[in-house]
Length: 198
Length: 230
Ligand SMILES: Cc1cc2nc3c(=O)[nH]c(=O)nc-3n(C[C@H](O)[C@H](O)[C@H](O)COP(=O)(O)OP(=O)(O)OC[C@H]3O[C@@H](n4cnc5c(N)ncnc54)[C@H](O)[C@@H]3O)c2cc1C
Image 1 (tube, rainbow over the protein chains, first blue to last red):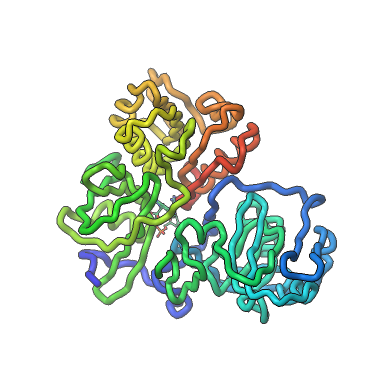
Image 2: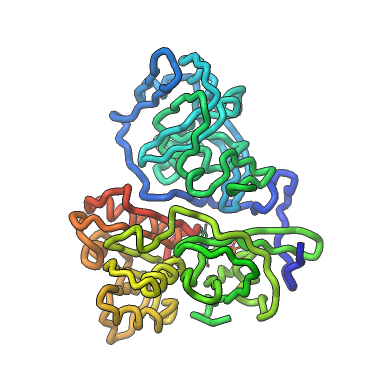
């Protein structure tokens, strides 16, 4: 690797928490492929469907009544920013998936605006993933994925699908929206799996 | 290196084995300090697939880590490491058709230079309307090229100046809003394909404005550069 002549750079104070190629930001930048959808809460629901006996849905009220957890995690966006100690509140995917027993190995998250993203089910279980509806003690902003988004902090943040409306459980993996446009199928920030072929 | 405005420079790169790109794609630039510390940022490709060089246009953010280096420190002959081209969605080629509406805030104009050059070089017959927002005329990048582009019957260029405008300015003034988007763009009936690029807040305003005007969100593609305001 060539040294860039004259480049000094800023070093993050807490570099062990920052994956390769990432920088720490205090802002909360936004990555989306299109306009921000605004979904009224009275038409919102969250559905687990696909390879299940019977699809399960929660209305906004039912979803809000599910047990919520407070979560503090670092998030890593493929556009290079990392944000440390972000605080969220949401429902564990363990809770949601328990309501829909399945033999599936993969999930495709589907969202308002037509986005999808694929995640192995093993990455959604075991206290690693949530559907969050609060950020920093406030209802989640539409710009940042409200009313609710997926939160899978151990993968690049595009996997934490904004405006999520449910999961389609599948026996086989199928690429989602960004994954079809050249982004990595799995997206581990510690292995710098940004793009196809990484 | 071409100085576009006091804060913005275009950098031409000589790249070995460049695989070619589509207009609108970006590259990832990686800088390495002597102690091995590295950081990366994304930059849109400013040149058309048909151009001889690959070029980037970078705006210096004074408190930034990478952009001041690229604008002020980089010299002709220096090497930088880059990865790309990347991004397949915020890209346009003639086959995607139109009519096209391109909406740029500040340096959000960069990928549109690539698209407009490609439009011309490929002899496209797709009608294009471009709306750019800049703080002032001095801070509008690619001024001369825009004037030339506007001479093409198929390309309509509108500029709005948000902070200051010359007394004899005959373009638009003020920030983009639904009224300006409907005057300078296409009606929803014409089913344009729209690309919006710039700072996050600008993109949010433009995209929400077009959706409010009845445009199909599925035909609006956005690229957010980060930061706020324009
Ligand atoms: C797909 C993509 C394409 C891009 N294309 C271009 C391009 O063609 N030309 C270009 O100049 N930039 C482009 N950017 C932005 C670029 O990647 C960097 O974010 C920008 O140069 C700032 O980096 P920095 O290291 O100088 O500042 P940083 O050290 O990252 O940040 C410094 C400060 O500026 C804020 N900030 C970050 N980005 C912006 C912004 N865009 N506007 C205002 N404030 C900001 C940060 O929040 C921080 O407070 C693009 C970004 C993306 C995601």
